[in-house]
Structures are given as structure tokens and as C-alpha cells.
Image (tube, rainbow, N blue to C red; front, side, top):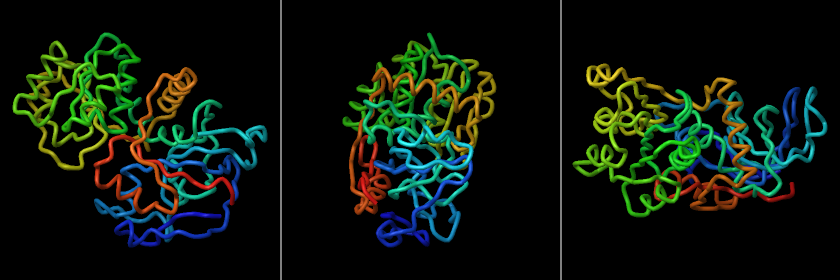
Length: 330
């Protein structure tokens, strides 16, 4: 079967290989999915690059946590009726080195979620890590109905879903962005106002846009954004952060946050508790059935262009998801 892989970490064009690999077989509790589309996440490219001291999980790694396709076979203990089911896949490489950048991928049956018939595979490939992360960050500390939510990086994959989910949950939503294109993307996702976080008076603009301090922050860059988020957070508010690349070990403004009885929630989709995962999947399934979410795709690549897809994510210039499409045959 056709697949992409790497045997060492490094630059995309230097380490990513394309060719034929033996097809995997599902073990007990697993399903074999014929992948039709795969999402490319920042985590995928960081692992491939060896960023932040990351090491390889195995001598050979097929990248890709997210994808969508059709169940082709099942392992022992899995309902045979699942064969032929359209699914979206998340966390494919957790605990294994074989991801979705291949014609066939094996995942735990619980990580292959039914994809409604009318939803395209490329949309299914957009969900996974971003949508589950967004749901946890928005709702992990309780309902948001009637509350003010700030989404930093509102044009990103997680940010875009977070805006939509917060609005769906009844919140007032303000977002931050930097460029006009990203501002338009955050507004299209449903942010009521979008603030340029680089502005000297960004905190004042957020407070004015939200009508006062915000109850919850969904934060893409915890350390870098602390000067802003610590100023705009309400008493009893939560910062739910899922990234801190620019300032990975920030100095914490303890007393300003302590005086607000602030809560810090560091969100990892790969450590999501089972009840939270089930809640998120149920909500996303309902929204997919009703076409209640936007899934902007910024760039599409064939599997043969997997290096360019990784570069597009690393460069950060694509607004929207980067998706790789796979051949329908072996």
C-alpha cells in the first residue's frame, strides 16, 4: 500500500519518504481504515522535525493523527457490522507509530467515529485534534452560556472551532488575530469582534468588545499572551491553554491571577479523560448531522506532496486546515 514515513527526524524534504509498505491488520479491539483524507497538525510536523527534544516513537513512523475514510476490516471483539462504515479518526499515532498518512491505518475502534453520509471525507479529516481540543478548552470548566469567552488565535484550526463551539454554547465571543486575512477568518467563524493582539491597547480593546472581563480564555500561546490574558480575565475565570510555543516556560504573574481566583487549565487532547472525549464526540456528531460547523480548508495536497503539506503547516501562512488526500485503491 502507498504510504509516507520517516526513519529519522529532520526537515520535511530531507526525511519524509514515499513508497510501498506492508498493509497492517487490526488486532483485537481495533479497526482497519482505508484512509481517504488526512489532516496535518502542528504536532505531526513537530514530531517529524524533532522539535522541542521530541524523539521518535519507533524506528519508522508514519505521521498523521487525524483522518477520515472507510472501515475495511475489524479485529476480534469489534462488531463486524462496522465494515463499510464511513468514519473520522483521531489520535491515530497515540501509542503506535502508524498514522493516517497511508492508504490504510489501524486505530482503536473507539477512535474511529461515524461520519455522517453527507459529510465529505476532507471535512472528516479536519476534526480530530483541533475539534476535540477546542471542545475541551471551551467546556472543560463548565457551561459558557451567557459568559464572555476570549479565543486567542481565532483564525487557527483550534481557534476557529473554539469560536464556533463557544457561540453554540451561548457565549459572547471575542477573538484575537494579527492580519486582515486572519481577522476575516475569525469573524467568519462567529467572533463578534476581533482584536489585533499586537496593538498597544489590545487589553482595553478586548475589555470593550466583551463588555468587561472575560470568564474564559481559550489560549493558543499561554506564555506569550499572559500580559494580555492576565489583564482581561474575570474573577473566578479560567485560562484554558493548549499551546505555549513562543514562550514555553513563562514566568507566571502569580498575584494578579491569585487575586482574581483564577484557574489555569492546561489542555492536552492526548490526555483527554474518557467522559470529556465522549461528550465532545457527541456534540460534534450532532453538529455534523446538522451542518452546524464551518471547516475552512486552506490547502489540499496529494499524498505524493506530503513534504509540501508539512511545510505549509510549519510556515504558518495557510489560514485554514491543511489536508492530504489519498488514492482510493491499494
